[in-house]
Structure formats: structure tokens, C-alpha cells
Length: 256
Image (cartoon, rainbow, N blue to C red; front, side, top):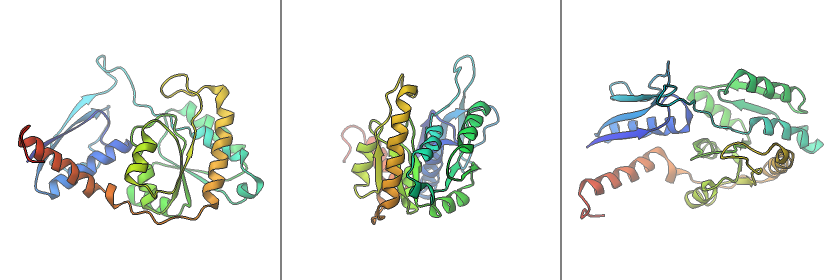
């Protein structure tokens, strides 16, 4: 089967880029002929999409698409939440920040907040996949304090690596997570009031950071339940997509 995978996001970063690459590899392994249509910016690569797979790009930052991809992850609020931990929790917590950053001004603001935190804060940067897995496995709790998310694949990765998860209770995310991973060790945090889709009201951030600190303490104290993530593995996701594709290929009267 010839399959065109379409994504508005970049293939060499973001959760959707990881998802796209994994699906393409699964399609190749199943004997199909995949191609990709995706967003890109100057200097982007094909990421982990296997060589030889046709990739067609739509350029970002042009007159037709004058924007940059930027997802607000709530990192500075997480760093400030460290100062709201109990003395007992603060004495044992070490925070490792993994991933790239939006701009130097934003990064410097996070570094200033980190310098005032009562716990060590490490800036690990973007990690290769094997190092990222080691970072997950060496951690007890994974925190995703985002103000906006689509499908947060990093949380699934963290759970698969044995982490307990603290994350913002964003529209649609909790519903999906509890449907596909009902036993997932997730502590949900109510988000702050928002000014728009991904911009929090600054006046609401202190209360959000207090909730975040309490959630981290709760997760640290909790036992890690057994959670089987195989239902959301790359192979399982690819199998479901291919089943839908086969149904559509048979037409509206195809067998389900």
C-alpha cells in the first residue's frame, strides 16, 4: 500500500515529529510504501525518517506562513515551584531540564529562576534518543507543566520508562490518557487561568505553582503502580492506522 503521511509539524523535533518517524518505520517494516508531507524551516533535516522515503516540505517563516513553532511548556513555573516545596521534599529533589529552548531571552529568564531555586537544576539540552531513555529511567517523577498541548508523547515515553508523571490537566489530554492508559501513574494539576490558547494570566501563576509543588510532593510519595503501555506502542498505533487505511481503501462499503 502507498501511504502519504501528512503533518503540519517538523520531522526533526517535537513529539509529532517523533511520532511521524516511528509510524513511517513501522509502515516500511510492514512492506508498505510511505511518503511524508510536513512542515519545515531553514536548516531542518529529515530527523529519524529513514533515508529513501520521499519527504515533501511546506516551508515555515515565509510570506505564506509567517510564524514560528513555539509551544509554551511552563518550564519557568516548574522552576519557581521548587521554591514552594516542603523543606523535606526540597532536600531530596534534583531537577533535570531536557530539550531545546525558544529564544535566549526566555532561556536566561529560566536560568535566573534556577539560580534562586532551593534544589539543583541541570540544563541537559536536547538529548539523543538513547540518552533520553537513560534520563527517563534515572528519574522518579517526570513533570510536564505545559499551558498548551496536543498529544503529549513525552508523558507516554516517561510512563513506559517507569516514571510517575505530573502534568497539567489540559482539555482532551486527560480524557485520552485515562482511556488508553487507565492505570497510568499520573497526578493532574489544574492549569492557571489563560489569556489566550497558550498564554497564562500572570496573576494566576503563583497559585498554579503552589498546586504544581503539591503535585510533585504527592507523586514522590506515591508507589509506582504496574502500567502496561503496549497498547500505545508504535507498532500498536501503526496497526490501528493501517487497519483504518485498509477499510478506506475498500470504499465506503468496505468490511470493518
